[in-house]
Length: 460
Image 1 (cartoon, rainbow, N blue to C red):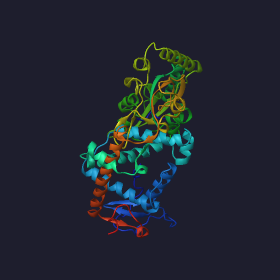
Image 2 (cartoon, helix red, strand yellow):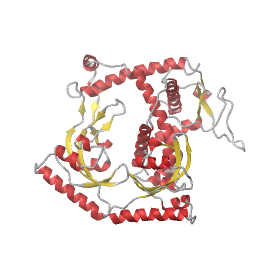
Image 3 (cartoon, rainbow, N blue to C red):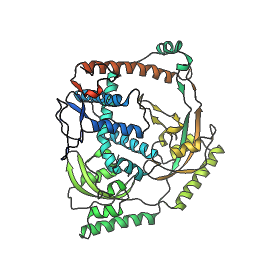
Image 4 (spheres, rainbow, N blue to C red):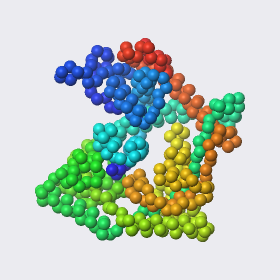
C-alpha cells in the first residue's frame, strides 16, 4: 500500500577488505558470497553484482560491452561518487527518497500488469520489504546524482556552441525527437457514501476494542484484516521509518504515540483509514504496526462522477468556458489543478520540469484515451486507478501533439542544447572518475584481468 511517502545494495556481511582470500562459507563449506572488487575501504560482493544483473534483466536494461565487466565497474564507479558525496556532506531529503521509491515500485508494478502479488513473488519480498530495502538504495542514488550535479554545475553552453556542434554533423547522427503530447485533465474523485465510511470506522473500532480487551493481538488482526498486503503479512509492521516517508496525517499520529500497549485513534490518510500501534522509536525514526481499511466506492458514485464530467465536457465543447478556467475550480487533482489542468513531469537527465510526454510515459489509461484524439479535442469521461490506489474519474484534453522528427535548431533548440550540455557534462564526469581512480586503493579479482573497462586505471 502506498501510504508510505538503484544504486548499491547494502553489504550483506562483514568481510576482510584488504585481500581476496577471505570467502564466506556456510557450515558445510559452500561459498555463500565473495568479494570480487575493493574500492578504497569498501568491498563489492558477487551478490551485489548478481543483484544488479537480475534487476537490469527485469527492467530490460542493455549493457554496452561485456556485462561481466561492465556491471561491477558501474558499481565501483558509484562507490567513488558516494564516497565523495559523504566527504562533501551531500544531503538528500526523506521526501525526495520516498518519491523515488514509489516511482520505482510503480514502474515494477507496471511491468507485471499492476499485480502486487506477482511482484512480491518475483522479488521474494513483500511490498513493504521491497520499499524498506529501496530506501537506502534510492538515498545512495540521489546522493550520487547530487554529487555528479555538483561536479558539472558550472558548465554551460551558448547558442553559438550549439549551432557549431550540429553544423557539420551527418544527418543520421542528428537526434530524433519522438512524438510528444501535452495533456490537460480535470479529475473528480467519486464520493464515498457515509454508510461506507461508518462501516469502515466501525470495523476499526471493533478491532481496537478486541485488542484492548485482550481477545486478540494487533498483529493477528492485521494479518487477518489489513488491506495493506505488504505489511499485513508481517502483522502490520512497517519497520523503522522516517517522518518524511509517511503520509503526513499518518506520520503525525505515529510519531506522537508513546505507549506500545495503546492503539491510536482512527487516522484517515490518502490511502484509507488506519489504526496504529507503536513498536519502538529510534532517533528520528519510528516502527509501528497498522491496520488499513479502504472504503469501497460504489458503482453509483462512479457513474455520478462520470456523468458530471461528461456534462462539463459538453459545456467545454460548447464554449461556455475554457478548460483553463474550469480545471482550477472543478478538478480535485492537486498535482494539476494549479497548472490549469496541464500535466507535467520531472526530466531526470536535465532537472527541468516539462509538460511534454512521450506516450509510453503517460499513465496507461490516459495514453489510451489521447492516442487517437486530435489536438484541442476533449475526451469522454473515463476512470483510472491513481498512484494512491484510488479510483478517480477524468476528462482529458489533447493540448498539443508534436510528431516525431529530426531535431532542428529552430524548432528543438532546447533538445539540441541538452545534447551538447550532456556531452560536456559526461566529459567532465569521465575525467573526474579517471582522476579519482588514480588516488584510491583498488583491487580486482583475477577474473577481471582481461576486461576492457570504460575507465582506465583500475588494474594497478
